[in-house]
Length: 499
Image (tube, rainbow, N blue to C red; front, side):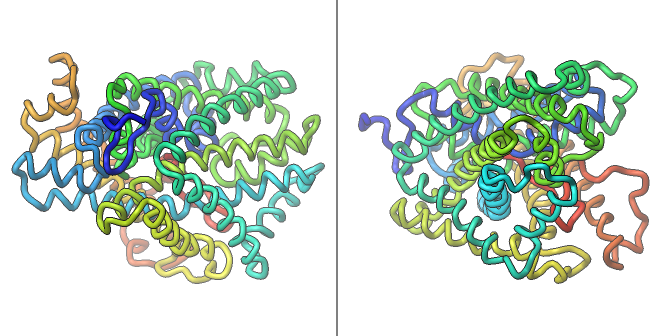
């Protein structure tokens, strides 16, 4: 690799690697277990258009901003923002933003690895025929045996450790030998496997029904709730506010067309979500899959039951969950990088040691989520498990707060000259739109996301505990937060950030 391509944190050797890494970071579980049901519930093709509008008008500008900050600084999110604050002559309090983003990505990765562990176990369960001829009760029992049985928690911990080893092993190889090679193999391989499953689903399923539910125009189902659902999905699916885009921008090879790549990534993210809906509803057209089902129960209970009735069901189920593992694997690799860069920059440790330290911390924090489903299931301070509080803290508070502060900082504290220097070639009209979104539109949207998410999540706890907020005026007649979320084995309000 040419010396000019080196930075102290490493750099990709090919321009196209940024695109593959960005797709791997963006396409997550929310594309598979959340978007299809939202599209069916909220107008089909009209919801897809609404979702694209939210992506391009609200969240894409922040995605580009975080990326160019990393490319400009060639450092992790903490040092990149620290340097930007100093250059702008802003108050030192702004430096807390980068540190908060590190906390957010740490929390999200801690429970992402747990979901990856379940998917990894399901690859083997499917291949060994655990779901052959299975009904709903048997599928629930299989999931409960893995996740909720206190006597088998060591098995669950084994799968959790296995998945984390896969992530840490790749990261320890370095930016080029590990991450670049992995993203260039895993992400295209995921897309190829996805297309193969799509072909199988369309061949053996009901194509017309699937297209009507995902892309059909149903204006009678489009409401104000649809706009909220599209906004939440557009924000959480991109993995903003966690330093991921900053580190990917720092790794990008010189000359990488970052803004154009970001647009392609957003389009691919939406395309994968739509194709996931076509696969799901084509094979489930004749099943009793509830129209509003999404999330944990959809992926780990209803989907195996649906696939069990197809030809070569063992191979199909194993392939589907292999796809899920590859999706979560690439997501986890991207989530780990801000932590590794922070440990390395903070302590001066080698990459191998930084990966080890970050990995051990993530493993220990992940045990809190893992035990929340079994050993600690009855420990519910304030009416919620430890996992639910961790998730609410990350998704309802820290991530929207960090994203809002980044938007406010670049919108109001940076000079026009410095902003244009970071953004590169930008027409005057696009720059004006970007500045307006950063200053006004995005902060307002993020305040709404945070307040609504937190309020409804807390209200949902009232069924389980008489917490103080339960005695206040409740949020009646509202849906639970329509960010990428759904239930875990023993929880009906589990939120998952599909980075």
